[in-house]
Picture 1 (cartoon, rainbow, N blue to C red):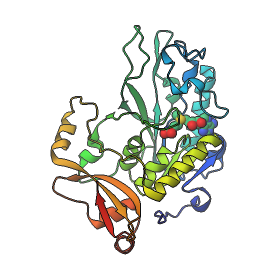
Picture 2: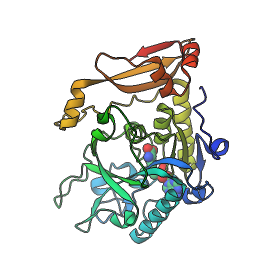
Picture 3: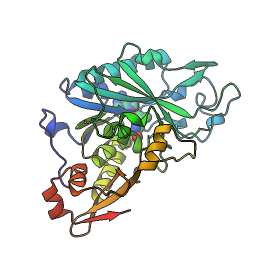
Length: 341
Ligand SMILES: C[S@@+](CC[C@H](N)C(=O)[O-])C[C@H]1O[C@@H](n2cnc3c(N)ncnc32)[C@H](O)[C@@H]1O
């Protein structure tokens, strides 16, 4: 694969575009302060200490098919006393804030749940951190039917940002801030990790910003790395489990070799056949998704990109070059063909 666009950074060789195995707090301590533009992450939710169903006693109960029933691979059990879990997550957020630049932000994905009949909205974790917005990730419902409450069908993404953080400037505000704060995306399928997010989720976070360096301290199956590479941005991953480091590295190598990842869908795609918001309707009318595979002159497919374009327009060579992180001249010389999908 062609080298990604490098940025001057003290982190460069040692850190960039790699997964570092270890405890994220310990690893972040070794990173210089104010060194990353953006953090996109989803921590373990501590779901196995739930008060209801079989997640707690291991029998399964309503959760018998839940992939997380056995916890994560390695030593992490996802079942620690709640106060300890809150303290740990706050320490993780503190470590993230230290390495974040003054104009940086954290997209922190979490899940609210009902415990002992009351909503646990995780506010103890984020209290005191600069939460600017809560984004709803509307996903398909799970299987935890319970007559005490309606089936949960969303997770949240806390946008925790330093004061100077701004979304990317664009002539088309519907491509960034106009997307709105409810994001409809289905869960990932076919991933052996028990709790991955779909690649379009970190893509949406990254693409809405000008970040050139993205950190995921709970890298899991490598989804944030794939999203960053799809967008030609640098990334740093941290993951405690050797098993997940190995499988994420394989997934990333596979992506680099032949772009075999599932294509990300457009931000406006309506997968759930539910009514679109006004902004989404506007976008559906005016834009369409262009997906292209970029091949080398020998025909070997190297990268797959997807983007939104005004109807009737195709991406220019400069745009494609920017998206895959090479110069226009390099694109002409090395990447001879564009395959439309
Ligand atoms: C919810 S998953 C992240 C999934 C990821 N977003 C994906 O798409 O695959 C949380 C991950 O955090 C890892 N983890 C648990 N404790 C950790 C720690 N102290 N430091 C780093 N990673 C940790 C777990 O092994 C698990 O893979």
